[in-house]
Length: 621
Image (tube, rainbow, N blue to C red; front, side):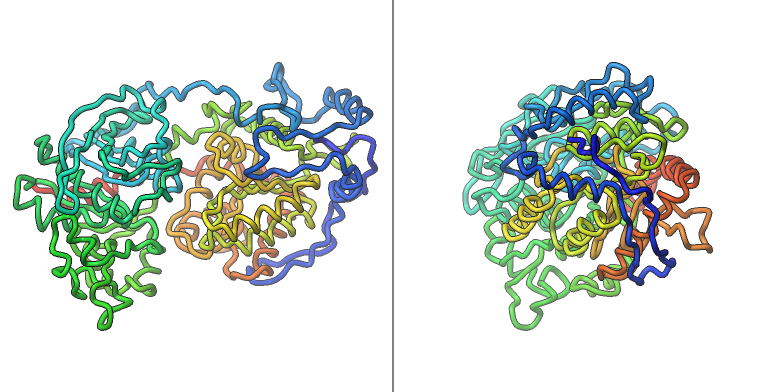
């Protein structure tokens, strides 16, 4: 809701202090924002307070004061955001019975020739991805996006691609095109052969094979966290995928496995199925996050037909943290490293970090000759502000007016102030909107996210946090923050996941915040730039490979965001302060930066070629 009508504004938004480019300094900004003043007065209107949380998302309402409502309607006609592109647009409101991101949207049109203009490879491969996630049908984090994006990019280059995933009970079947049962077969578990259904379909233009065991595995309302043992389920899935290839007579060139969930597949392949009928495939492992390692006991591995004790050595799968005193403790991720033909992680900087530190560094050093760092890309068809089906207005780098409409659309829908007073003294363009779209886990810098919520408001900006927490304690903490801040006029904390809303938020954002403690690659900063949101990031992993500081005079030609190094609040304050100062005091330069970041090519078309080189280096001719 807009609280601005009828309220007075201070005459200046300028900061009282400045901040140097020293990324570890603390900011001395003391903005006197018109919207802080609004917030203070609006908080007196107690009946207008509301909270967004996982308990109050579908039917949230705000009572409007009639005088403000009438004045709002009159002033909307004079809004600086209005333009020909917004004619006929139905603006959302927090009063809406159905939230604006839950509306009816057209289907993605991926039927056009996406390969047009993409150079076709002459030496073609058959690649099978075996994975726990795939966007959008089974997406929890960036892994799902990578599978779909890389798969589509390789298809566009002429290769044959299949994705194999578990047929989770919670998968929305209507999102799978031409879903059909292909084969029923058996796979082994704990002395028994378990019947499995193999379904074929298509998701976002990528052929997908879904494996559905007849036992209790992969049942539940979520991708992860079912009542079954996840380790057993993914061990079963890994062998079931190879069993399907054997009974179906499929011999791909490359089996590309991802993360710990499929880390056992290379063991099954080389110590079992390669001696049966699968001779041709070679194995590539991508590690998306070293934090997740797949701890496994010897007897668990043995339940699926392998001799678990054979892997309890330092040069195979024994967990490096327990060498010498707990040899029955194995790691599926380490086993995958040892048994794969090639290992990839998701950025060059993360590769260096993992070779220098962490419990897997020894195993990676011993296998350094087959270890590469390839930066992830983004699917620039799915993430394209010029064609995005979820946006109220389309835009691109040469015509950015639609981004202002998207910003106002989100502000109106979330009840954020979207309109300043007349005569240009305090206009909406001076109020930056910061967006943080993330899983709420320690890796993502939770203490910096919570600090940013407070500091952005102190600087006179607006902030929206969209994310879910898997830990109950973290969930309760952010529910408390939502209860505290969502009653005001500048902060919204939305404890959920929504693909539709994430697209809208990227399009609305002036800045995207990614303050991770470590970040193997990160997609948020790349997606944000695609939608004209300037990134504010901590210098680590893939963030260091994609964002370069605006105040770094040695790299002005690639400068595209605001970077800080420390893990303390002062370092974040400095980066936020510099970004706000730049936004408010240099509007023309800011517009140029927005256009610049939108033109950066972080597409999978660039990255896929590097994966093809890896595939070709290990394939059997």
